[in-house]
Image 1: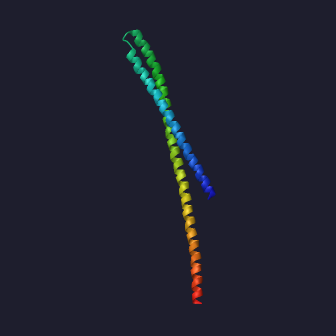
Image 2: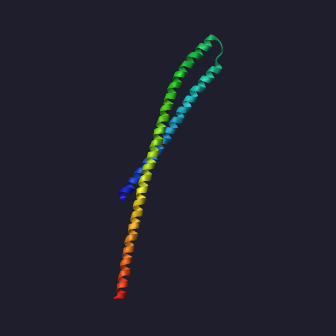
Image 3: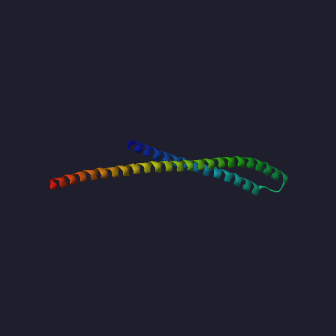
Length: 138
């Protein structure tokens, strides 16, 4: 039983660790999403500030190209953080399942031990009843 108790504590610890990792990954994903939105917002603001003269449009176009490259890189990072979040969710699900399996094994063992204890107690009571009956008959 002690081995199962230690295993249960380890599984519970793994479950807590996996949940913490998931929270951290979701936070990084949200931060990356904010970065992508800021890049997009900078492009919108720059377009609003651009006048229709050629020099201003050329500067905006150069800025737009730079922001497009930055946006692609940030979206790539966003995709990566999204993938990490999904992996962490899988790890949490696995850790929860493993913890539940150990808990079920412990519960089954406890039920089995209780049943065996009841059977042993019934045997003792049957022996007492038999010896009392034999004394009456004899």
